[in-house]
Image 1 (cartoon, rainbow, N blue to C red):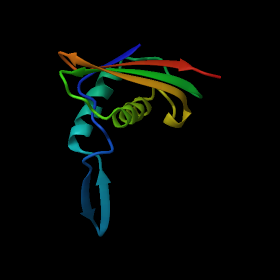
Image 2: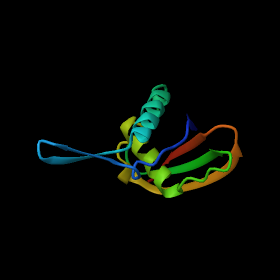
Image 3: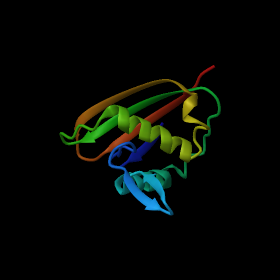
Image 4: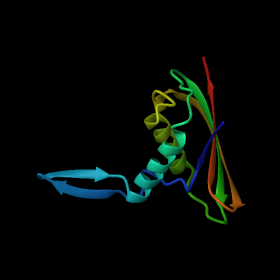
Length: 117
C-alpha cells in the first residue's frame, strides 16, 4: 500500500494562464504544483513499478468536514503516480475505485495498485 500525506489538490481547477512570445501557456495552480512536489518526494522510496494494465484503489482520508471533488483529486493522484514512475501510463488503469472518509485530523491518501491481465 502506498501512502501520501497532504491535501490532494485538483490539477484541473484554478489553472494559471500566461502569454509568452505570443503563445498562451496553461499551467496547473501553484497549490497543485506544491502538492505534486511533496507527493513525489514521499514516493521516492517506493520501489515497485507497474507496467501494463492495473487496478487502482484509492482511499481519501479528508481533514475535518472538507469535501473535495472525488473525480478531480483521483485524476491528480493518477498523474502523480505516472510522474513518479510507479505506473507507466495512467491510460493503463483499467479498473479503479475510490472512497472518501471525513473527520480526520490530517489528510492521507492510501493507494493500492494491483496488476490485471
